[in-house]
Length: 160
Figure 1 (cartoon, rainbow, N blue to C red):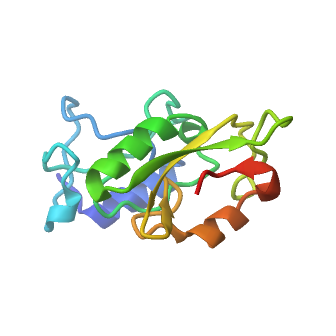
Figure 2 (tube, rainbow, N blue to C red):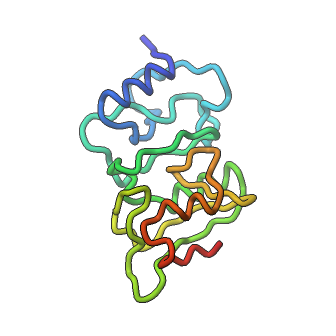
């Protein structure tokens, strides 16, 4: 029996994570969808995320759809993969890919959204005065608001 999208999201939240990308070759039934925003980047119909069991796989960051919801910074899958996510976002909305790095002599960026993954860089998309990454959702954030989310924003070279 197929579930609706809300049921899938609730299932994700209750199971402890939603970061595993939908596997079209799996035997799991796909959720039913009504609108075109539920297509993945390749135009395939189906859920962009499915419930995970246990720890998320950090080597497979979630796919980003046209109207992606902000991902949870605490999810282990968010530890890496920002380059691939930024490339997906750029294909969807355009804009310019920017790499955020610490200013010398610092070697890490510090906490972002109160979570410190000890990143040495972070890749985002900038378009029309807004910044987009997996954590902003499809609406992005104004540049100043985005920069304010970093613990040591004055020690970071944002490049924008």
